[in-house]
Figure 1 (spheres, one colour):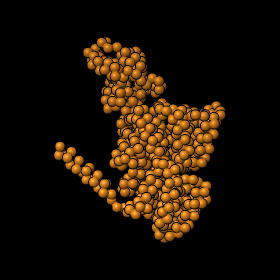
Figure 2 (cartoon, helix red, strand yellow):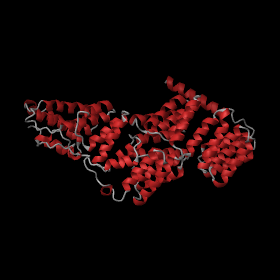
Figure 3 (spheres, rainbow, N blue to C red):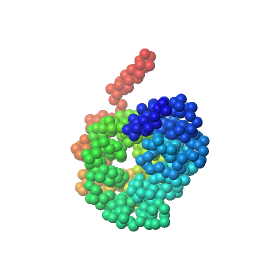
Figure 4 (cartoon, rainbow, N blue to C red):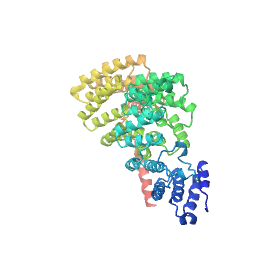
Length: 558
């Protein structure tokens, strides 16, 4: 033979896929291979070339090449083919032993075709390819679970995830997947105490003698069922056993962010980055928190770091999106959309997109984005986005239904109660109900300032300015929070108590110099105090606009 097959296998083992692909082209076009009648030899060489293409992410070419290999496999006489239809182990997937006649494995080739379709987001084609494979390896089962879940076939996904756990109880992504699909902790644990043959059971003590895996299952089930307090307790217990565990710290930070413990979540993400400065997982969630805190210096550094690690990840595009939000909303929205194109199941991308569309007064489009996030995995942010989107275009009935759905899903969540109150507050005859929901939220979580501010707004709507001020000042005694100062400043400014408004805006900026609401409010207030109409357009601004228009026209002419 002109080109020895084992040389391609050597190149593949060393990760030299460019060279393997080029050498593979020589191999399949060799006059020796073309002249020989052995379909077995042709299939082997095509599989080697397909492997090189797969690793090069040339998935279309890989699919075509693998299918050619299967065509030649079908021509091999059965009595002498030596083709194995049983699953190969994970370690042998990429390194075919060129000297072994039994190296060709049709199931493995079909799995590679399905994996290529999956990489191209061609779910139906991938499932169709895998359906002919009857004996599946662990890797095949996890792919089947993902494919079924992406297609909305949740029952099939659950079955395949459970099969993964029977083969190996430490497939953590299967545990998370089952929890998100509604499986109970008991149901998940029973899956990995049963062997693949299903004829015998293994003791949990044998698998998990210290019970950390069981605690992990329980924590993920708590997260999926919105029992966030229980999840945090379980993650804290696990972190005592596995301190500085980046995965556990990240999971904890995600939960803290969901329930509004933003300062704690930021500290947790900072710790993750101090342990592993090159991690990208959930760093867009960290970016969103920094944006909420108006900490643009740290946000800018974070985005710079993420871009230097891997500029192709969905997390990086979401982080870019929130960075650009105050500079250029159109650019910010385009980055959010790009994150979804990179990974159509990336929830933060939909959340950020929905928020931008809502700010741009496009509530119908925002509702579509939040609904997409909700369909992938419901959480408080998608519920909040949907409710506010529905209210923005007058669909009060749908908003109330969604808010109640959130309350039923999270009965111990003060934020879900506040969400129902927001809907009632939107109607003149529902304000008394809104007040009850806000007060219930504060009883459940006394430190929930969002509910306190909403209740103050309700007092203002009904002309009870004194009640609003006394409520906010009472909370300010226990929580020196910038949002309380800003709200008090707005109340005082509206009632022409300008000096009091000034002191509260200044207090807010002492706590957080980057608070945009305080900076804008203070600028407006200073104009009022100077006798200038804050709504009047500045002549300089008009001149700037004219200059920009002129420059644009000149550029177009040139």
